[in-house]
Length: 421
Ligand code: SF4
Image (cartoon, rainbow, N blue to C red):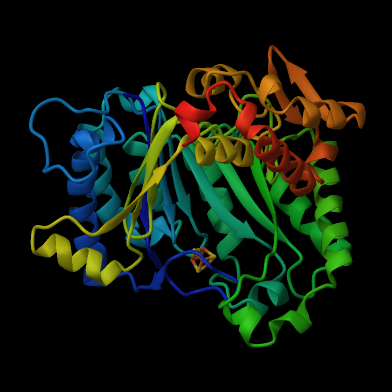
């Protein structure tokens, strides 16, 4: 079976006020970081070998002996949290163990590690490069100091330019191995500041840029402590994101997903697999994985409990940490396939869709495709359909149409009884 691998590092130097990822604060000397590195290797071995990943059932078998069930891992993504808080020494321990556990040579896969400027030092970046990491995703977010401070994000001073220069020096110019995240709609941001952020970033020539619009998730300090008053009004925030998008398009980046822009050939393989609902394994607190049986169009989602201390304590006792398992029936999986797939401008994988659900995308949602084709928001090729850049601005309305049509046609689908009940 082929699956990509996501490893969640649930630690950060400090917690940003807008963040709703699972992460806890940790200093570089925190003993939990050492324990994490030891435990993650055990879990990766387990995930690759467990027969639980071979088919939707059975759920909880003991660890298997013998050859890995997952025999191809085309993409690895270490995200978080902040993987760079692990530092050079721990990465030099973690990455070779990972490489030894994974099938295929490091050169044959995309291997991404996320880093934040305050901990992306020379030692960390060299340890990554020396162990076959071929893509670094740097959380830039903004160069504007008042905006960064207002959301209590770590960094400051010359930390950001020096991290960007190091990434370029160590991973090479040309951008293939370098992605950066920016946020629009931050406190105090206006179009002039955003333009400067984008120009400053593009001076380092990243091959890939993710442009996110700040969202105020419930429970985050920014939402709960009245930080909303610092933010641009919603329509201004929308305008800012559109202005940022246009600057990236003018600079030669192609928008290939809601928030993702890439120079030709520098798209993120791991994320495309995820949007196209291809199997992935998740390791680490709060990570989730999804394994799908193509023949029945059903699958399982495994989600590791979001508690780093419990996760570490379980491993210290030699036990696997708790995870929830959710059965995905064919109808749920079909809706998710559309939900995720239409984020990507090429849409869901048409061949895989037919294999899983026994019908084409056109047969499943003909009315929606007709309506959005007539509006000029579809791009179609070889049985696949995706939204154009302008169409993506209406993604929620489009998906509402998709779900409505699926529910209306559900009873008339030839495979309805077998697959959906
Ligand atoms: S660095 Fe990233 S993961 Fe960590 S708190 Fe900030 S936004 Fe969240």
